[in-house]
Each structure stands twice: as structure tokens, then as C-alpha cells.
Image (cartoon, helix red, strand yellow):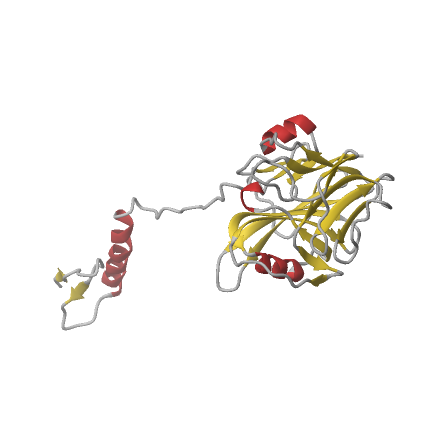
Amino acid sequence: MPIKRLDGRHNKQHFEIQSSGKLRPHITFYILLCLLMFPLLGCDILPSVTVNITPATSPSNGTQLNVWNKVATGVEVRHEDWKIPGGDDDTVTIVRFDLHKIKLSVGYQPGQPLSMNDWTQLEHPLAIINGGYFDQQFNATALVVSNGKVSGKSYTGFGGMLSVDTCGSISLRSLRQQPYDPNSEQLEQATQSSPVLMLGGKRTQFSADASQTRRSVVAMDKQGHLLFIVSPNQVFSLDQLADQLVSTELSISTGLNLDGGASTGLYVNGGGSHITIDSLAKLPLVIIVKAR
């Protein structure tokens, strides 16, 4: 029963068996075994497996998606896989804070930006995220209040503000719905940004270009928790980001876009659990969380 190898023009192995009778079972077995062995011998017995790890994201050490993990008193972390319709996806990191267990401040060094690592060395926070927009001279483009010191001018008719008043109460609001009044408000901390992505549990409407870049968001959920949300890769436009916020199980009431792109950065120090998503640019403005 001669076996003749035929032409392999398509990089496959073809065999022809010439016989007037039926194949015996044990011969069939050997032929099948040969067919299985030839491809494996060509690739060192076992095929190689490639695991892609996003460089900007700290390894989650096998942490399950869509599960809250307590990393410190009043601090929980969650990872979710967000996808755009028919396109790319990103592993998004969400940090949730119990406002009764933490205190919030705004770090601001106009003209003297720091890397995310330098900010963490300076402040020793539980968590830190980039703040609002700044210009090429590293001055904030809107109102900033850092430890009671007021800088810049408030956005009017657009944008939103994360703030802490003199009683320590943290709020996140739309400046169109509730404008800032310097005559009646006494704030200890504040940073402003734009656009507001969600308000009253609903997606807002805004004008934005369709560019896809790194994203960072500060939000409040319907239970009164503060959330930091970071997408470290160039996947979402602002419209796509807003759609994702609505579709998640995070129960978001208000969501404010922060200065994304190269400014996007997040650090969480949960004792034995550390998350570092480094910004690509130095930052004059950050939001800092410490234990109360």
C-alpha cells in the first residue's frame, strides 16, 4: 500500500492512498497519527501562545472583572472591559470611595508641574488622579481652589466642578445647572473641567470631536460614592465614553470628564495592592485622596 506525498502549494501536507481495498483500522490510526505529528514537529511540538498586556496598566494579578475588591478602608477597586460597537476595547479601572472614610484635596503647582510619581512621593496619598485642563505654561484654564487658595476664573454656562466646602462636604455638579458664586460659596478645594458626561443619572448632550484618546473621569454614584474612572488606551471618544458610563452597572448619577490624553494618570496605594497608570505628561493639577 504505497503512500505518495502530493504537491503542497498551499503550505499544507497532502497524502494520497492508492489501494483497491479498504484500509485496515490500525493502518488508518497510524496515518492519522502522522498527520497530527508533522505540523507539531514544524513548530517545536507545541504552538506558541502570545499574551498581550497593556503597558499603561498595572497587572491585576488575576483579579476578576466586574468585581469590587477592597484595597483600603473606604476604598474599592474594580476592572471592567469596555468595548465600542464593532471596534476596539479597553480594560478600565474604577476606584470607589466612601466619603465618610476619606478626605479630598486638590494639588496645584502652576508653572511647576510634577510627574505622577513625584506627586505621589510629595503627597503620600491613598489615591490620586489628574485634574482639569491647563495651558502650555502649566496654568489651569479654569477655577482652582487648593487648600483654600483661589486661582483662575470659573467656567460660565458649561463644564462641571468637583469641590470641597469649609465643612468638608464633597460635591460634583454642573456649572450650567448650578453656577459658581464666589460671593456665597466658601470652598477649600475645587477643580473644574468639561464636559459633564452624565447628570441626574442620564447621559448629557455636548459637542465634541470624535478623537479617541486616553480618558479620565470623576463621578458620583446614586449611593453617594466618589468614583475615579480611567481608560488608559486610545480607544474612546467623548461620546463613546458617555455611552459607556450609561451602560455600566456603576449606577452613576453625575460624571465629569477630566483632562485626558497625555494627562490621564491614576495611582492607588491600598497597602498590599498598588495601581499605577502613569501620565505621559507632567501635571500641575491633581485630585488627591487621603484617609480621614
